[in-house]
Length: 303
Image (cartoon, rainbow, N blue to C red):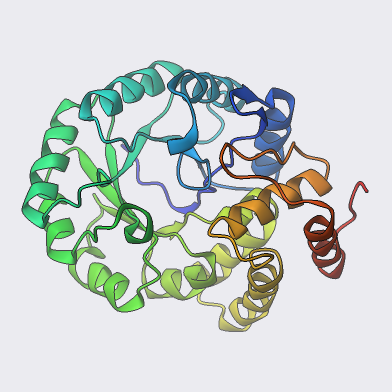
């Protein structure tokens, strides 16, 4: 598998109801991101609300997006689950639809030990029909993929990379130190506020939620960091921080980031902002704050 470098948006799952896709919105969003120059897409991750979606809807969404992408850019599919068999089944569907790889965070609820993680990921990688990317998401699954664990798993021929959403720079720099010179293993950073810094240090790209809204911005940040253009990186970082501190911080919700992204896409006329149950979309006062944030960023809203 050819190594993917660049910006890989974790695509939201546009919804009209708790078990109904916003199909037209999903198609518009795919085209919006591809037009913005993104290098790949990642479906059914945290930003995609995967664990709140029915299996039927997950399968439908994968099929819809891959049909729309039509091979123009690579697509990765999240298969995180507490059941290894369900992960394998979704991976098989993703492959049949045209995905090039799958992504899996650690099984959640009971926190596995590091040795159990090694055994789990080894069994999963052995059973999969597509290359596997590890996903370090300790805030949500309550277990940290330690750097030595990642280094051990990187020797498996079907484990080809890792997305880190820990926001721990010491950890990420340790991964770059241990694995950054390997051409058969990719390292991606999740928090977009760290993408420029991480790419400058040797990361292969960013899996940045903001690229749903502003794909050109994050692609420009990747290109500037890859070229070592520090002046441009500093300039773009200010805009990224403006997004982070205005759109992702409305309300005291664990889901404020996702609410902000979906609300923004709705105000930009791209897709519906319905969130999967039990979460709710922003109401009028919060929606107005997002509208004001978008206007401050120079955007034209549809309302």
